[in-house]
Image (cartoon, rainbow, N blue to C red; front, top):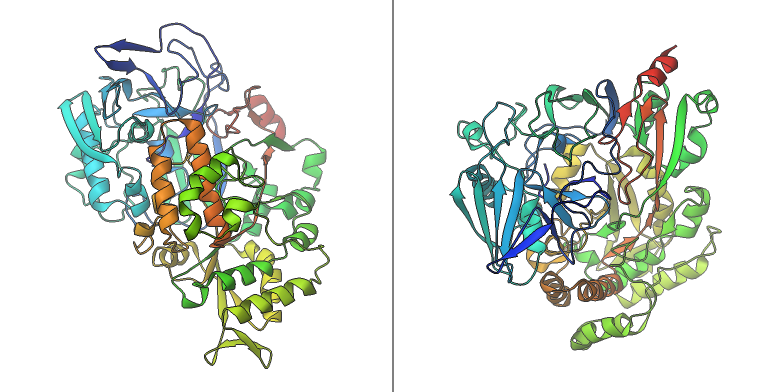
Length: 604
């Protein structure tokens, strides 16, 4: 369950009733947009990426890696299962053709003043939990209180600007904000999902649980085998099934996730027909693993779909809580030894693009040298940032791809020497101690991508090693910041907003379980984050976010890796899907359906 708007659907359709009305200084509407106007108006029949005539039925099996030990996604303890968000509704839902919009689900309409200092949601009286009890404004107040008292730090960060929640009646809910003239807090609270107070009042929500909790969404948990599998079943009498925003969605009767500890074992299960669909994230498997008879016989389908979704950075994150990483020259030296070009040639099959931004594949990330707008934003901080921030394009170190980059070794050794580290008998030493780095990983197939980096570090006298742990131990170690270097891909919630505080803000650096994994404490970053949150127009927000991007990049808090600009989908030929693909989502499993004729043919 996420506090963020689920990216489920997109509209292009019919204009009918007016989208919003102005009355007594208030905007009354069924849809919100952070900047400008929502794309779509009330009165449409269904999203264009959804087929309203899609047949309901069928059971599918999907694969997930790792494990889970809790069904409570609100608290810091425990790992929850994949796609548990299927079980919960929210006040409003997003459009996958827009980056920050919200259309009424539990909330039929919303109203807010010109200064956007508060918002009132008018709840649909027909909204129900799976036990038939109505969803009330009091449940949302309870949810907010739960997050404030027990919620994960990252989850709390989304509601930092909320100053109050008021239950006006069973079906009217009011949020007030510390901010003015910005839609961001309104959009964030619109994504809130309700916790049923009547269910939780006899249970301890601060603890992990494997009892399927009462929820309100299109699916409920049918069965589970802790850490091994979980099955979601479609709710036959789901209260919102016939709303236009849901028409043609949620077509499978059952969705089961089987968990695997090893990625290769999971892939073999897919090829054997034990898994029906996978989004392939391995370039090696995509290039070599699908040369099988089933593909040639059109029993197994391979498909590439453009991915325009703005991405969060995937990178090696230094833990600056470790003393050896506090010097920027050390971080820069280590980054110099990451030979992406050789990894691209030998391991990635040329399928990826080198990442050069914290916000790749988006208008919020840097490209080329700083623009005049970015320089103007950065000028007040000129004496607090490296000169390159205001003058140069950020470019990661580049090699010839041969794997024999002596120049990089010499450059790294020189930087280490400037930072007080020297080679002594083939070991990189300072104060009588050798530099030692452990790469913490949770997926076995990640080792092949880290191993070449480890070998390069060893060439300059660093004791480098890889440690593979299970998903539960990995999460605990991340929460406790107990690592040297990890590979992480951050989620990106465009346009960027309060979540940046948890990712890169000083206050989050020492808060257990926060998303500031690198331990960044930079007053310039803090100031720019607050300017981004307070931005009143999209162009200012973009320019300020790019300024932040430059500050973070030139401090070498992370080593950017790579990203892909398309979805790689592999599935058994038993599915139907809409002809129109959403701009920011491939749609599975929400808008796909089981084609019974294909499924029977495949079985035969």
